[in-house]
Structures are given as structure tokens and as C-alpha cells.
Amino acid sequence: MTTLKETKIDDLQVSVYSTNEALGQAAAQEAVEVIQAAIAKKGEANIILATGNSQLTFLATLRQAKIEWAKVNVFHMDEYINLPPNHPASFPLFLQRELLDYIKVKKFFSVQAKADEIERSCHEYSAALRAHPIDLCALGIGENGHLAFNAPPFAEFNAPLWVKVIKLAEASRQQQVGEGHFNSVEEMPTHAITLTIPCLLAAKRVLAIVPEARKAHAVKQSLTGAISESCPGSILRRAAHAHLFLDKESASDTVK
Image 1 (spheres, one colour):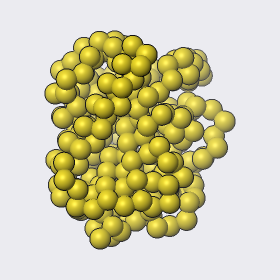
Image 2: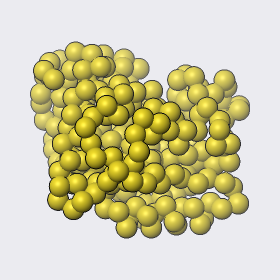
Image 3: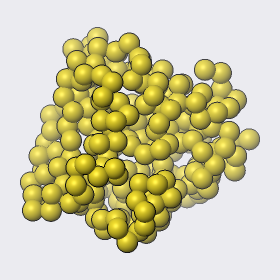
């Protein structure tokens, strides 16, 4: 896809596209290349995928790609504690609906977030991630700069664990309501299991897929503010293995 602008901010590669659809197609094209290279090298690929409305155009293109999906293990980033698995806001259900119903992967590793099994679930998911070195992590940046559910004031750039329980920041909860996943903040869970920032950045290649005008402020803070846990997305500027995909709207305050 033709970019409107290519630039580099600190160590981070940044590409701007005219539309959300063009952004999703470009990110999917790079994802396919990474996945195919991993399969060619070691016989399988291990990937982490984000969920949320910002990922829809990316996933719509990815599910149509010519990939040996039977050789791909899929992980995801987070899940609400004690949310019923059939709840419309469930992140495994989102990936099932937007990707896994269309393809047959080697294995989908789903975060188990039952309140009485949290410690074991975190330990087992971390062990699975370490046993399957991640080739590709496709993530978003939240409206408050969060990566997965690592949001201020709870984000840690040097978190000692790869998977942990985190209290949901108010801004993260408001975003989920705004995207239509819950009717109100009051009906949302207050805690979730999330992959930590060190886990996300341990992937060999990181694609940050960030369309839409509502992300413009977070993009600006991530690219021009201090590299600080007060804006978790800013850590991507230290990640030479990362590539940030923006559309015209999300780049409007930053990349002219």
C-alpha cells in the first residue's frame, strides 16, 4: 500500500496511510511476511494478537491471507476476570468472531480468567508464552496510551512478570464503553489478566496498529511526549523492532 508519509521517531518506524482500510491492509501484509518467514525457518509461527475495534480492518485482511494457518499458534493479550465466556465483550470471543471462525490454526491459547484460578492461569499462560517464542505481536494503543491493559497509573515498563492481574484504569473502562462493548462502566469488571509490556516487546516483530481520530491524542503523547509510564505507548520509541501504522486521522496531531 502507498503511504502518505514514512518517518522514524527515535527507534520507531512510523507509516501513515490515507484510510483505516489501507492501514489494515498494509499491516496485514507485513504480518503475513513475518508469519511466513517464521514457518519457513522453524516449521511454525507464534503470534500475539490484540482485540478491539481498531484491529478490525487488520484482522479482516489477515484472515484472507494465504498462510499455512495449521502451523500458527495464536495468543491474545488480556481478558476480564470472571466475565462469562459468551459475553459479547469477551476478548477470546472477539478473536473467534473476527479471525478464528474463518481459519484453522494449530492452537489458540486462550486466557482463562476465572476468579478462583487466577494465579494458576497467569503462571500457565506465562509458561506457554515462554515455550513458544513470539514471532509477531500485533497490538494497539489505547486512548490513554495503554498497551494491552497496561494503563497509567498501573503500567510498568520493567514489570517482573509476563502475565499478571491488573486493576483497570478508569480511562480504559470508559474506552470499552465508548466502543460499545458494555452499556455502562458500572457493569464492567474492575480487574483483568494482561500480558505485561516486557512480554509484548519480547516478540521478534511488533506491529502497532492505531487508526481513528479518537487515538490522535494518544499518538501525539506517544510520539512527542516523554518516554514515560504515564503514556505506555511511548515505550515503542525505544523498540527498533516495532512498526507503527497510522491513518490520516490518528496521525493528524503529530505526523504532518
